[in-house]
Length: 449
Image (cartoon, rainbow, N blue to C red):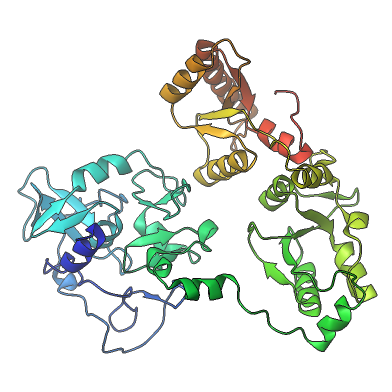
């Protein structure tokens, strides 16, 4: 039997736990959470006969010092579920204050931790999952204990279960107890992948809605006929966002709030110098060879009531002074040449904010670089590459939090020294993390910094 199914069938064993469910339970008189048809969490009032009522949660009196071993929270809410206590692989009920080595966890944290399940009345893999979680920082709050990872195996985001429930754009598969982070909401869950091939084909290649008269008029001037544009705004004002949506209605395009691989045009705000803000969307568009245009292109298309040549409105400068990246990125993609970081290996050392580091890793991999996960792997890789040109980079964080100038200098010097010590041991190059951003923004390798 599948691990998740065992967990699901046995999650109602304890009188103090919530019974298992086919859908996340609804917050109403039963005070639970509901997932809509798109697996987005929302709260609503209802009185469905299918909603399972919580068992005896109000009668629980946890010890004052109780903290969940996963999320480190002492609170119990509808999102966390009640506290459960385990000793020697079995659940303990009643007075647990007299027992030693008792593990305290929220019921929801147990349910959604990947490898934890019940076999009869014995809980399996709790200790090993707790040990794994102590090494993982939550991508939401930054604290360790984040056992719940994104279903997308290449994604490095991990969350405390309560933190993930608070993120509106996370999606949930209630049958298999897996979650997708906001970046990978377009990925299919296992339950969706089991659909028939014909159903999948229909989803992947839906019949296009017929163009309206207004849209046909817009494309009448195009020698190539209508195109499937996917537009994504970057740092746009409210007025510009509204105009972009209206323009999409006019030409039959799709507007994306977040970066997706099928984006064809990133439309960005520019300052008086014509520079756009350096955002994740802009950098990913450079690496993907997509158009990065000013809002003037949208206005020109509206004025002409038809498609206008994008090259006239292509942005060439960003707010850090790097130029030429968007055009160079398009040319590189059109020739299918080597990617920007082909042949380079990156090891990130020291403290980074979890989400920011995840974005950096995504950029490196999109640019063709390889991410080294540990110092041991870095040493092994570099030993194997002896006698060749060093291609490993030790990357340290040169962003500093608030504080006095002297303290910032001390922290930066400490980070640099730590990175240089490691690089010297191995015989590789040290770079600031901004070298990655500068190289992508210019779409060429800039001097090491």
